[in-house]
Amino acid sequence: MVNLTSQRFAIATIENTGASAEIALELSQIAEQLRRCTVQVRSRGGGGGSGTIWNSQGLIITNAHVAPFDRAIVELWDGRVIEAIRTDIDSRQDLAALQVEATDLPAVTVGDSKALRVGELVLAVGNPLGLVGALTTGIIHATDATEDFSTQRWVKADIRLAPGNSGGLLADARGRAIAINTMIANGLALAIPSKRVERFLKRDRPLSLGVTLRPVLFRLENQRVLGLLVLEVAPGSLATSVSLQMGDVLIAVGGESFHTPEDLLSILKYAEPGKPLMLEFLRSGRRCYAIASAPQDTIEPTFPEVKSA
Image (cartoon, rainbow, N blue to C red; front, side):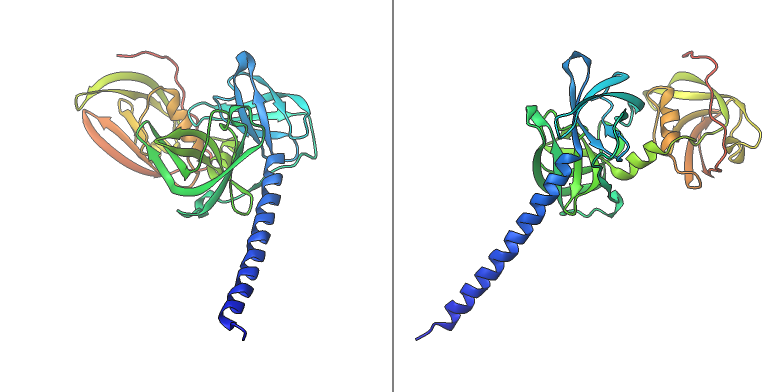
């Protein structure tokens, strides 16, 4: 007598095992591709971490804290060691771009970080604790998230990272780069979204207000605040379009306050031309708000003198 139930169960088990094997093989192939796109970055003084090959012409993305100097040493997946020149850095966003003299490098396929969903499978590749090309898996915990210590938006993942993962790749299940791993907070990995990395690379013409400013320190609602006193407004500028006046004190732009005068420049670098931008300022001691649609050719703010009062 044949037990059809057992027979059907056996067939289903074989089919499921085959599917699992295919998935495992596909993930293994994706992992190998990602490892080839990941490099070790070493800087003077023994510091370092990981980097991600962003294009085949030698552009490598890493964290600013991984590449604090103008040169670094990069080791590729095949063991080649090359000197890299840092071509750009933004310490506020913790991003740096390195360039090596090499072509036809295996580069990542950049994915859309805005399309991420909570619970989605992700893979992290890096060089934690000296382990070259180590890979871990996890899931997306949150997208477009913030932390108490920063106004920056992060991709949060429930995935294991360790020292040395900084600057390495966070990829989706198809192997597309969706973020750059940066740090761990409250047991979760924080990574810079790929959309922000792309804006970092395309910031040749940063958005500007067209004002001359002077930093001033004052108390606001029992807190010590850094403001930017408007000394001059350029005709036809973004500041003019929202009637910003000499004597106004900027206290926030795009919802972000200032810790240093340079923070304004950094905020404007990542503002999208044509997208509404919120300005918060004080006029005669009264808090005011204005929303501007930024033109493409606004004038960069200047700081002719640095004083505090």
